[in-house]
Image (cartoon, rainbow, N blue to C red):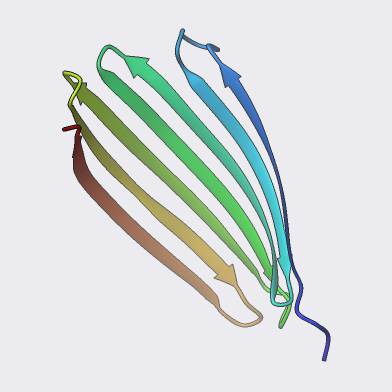
Length: 125
């Protein structure tokens, strides 16, 4: 039996002030390999300040190949996060997102959908 292996390599490109002063734009790629699968991920994260708001759309695309049968799974995961700074002591945040995936195996295709949302706050005392 071969020894388990787990390798991960990533690269991120970060740029500021592309569209507007104070924005941040991140493009990333990651390759992960282990004894059961090989996964490639692409990520795009944008952060834009608008007055007291910080708006952050995000997108991740994954392709996973499973070693056991050579099948592939594709995933698409968009999300949107908004933060509001209220005075200097209170920060409100909300996030909504989901993931759509398709796993193409030898004789079947499995599709799944997941959705989530969260809301929170932070206070500085």
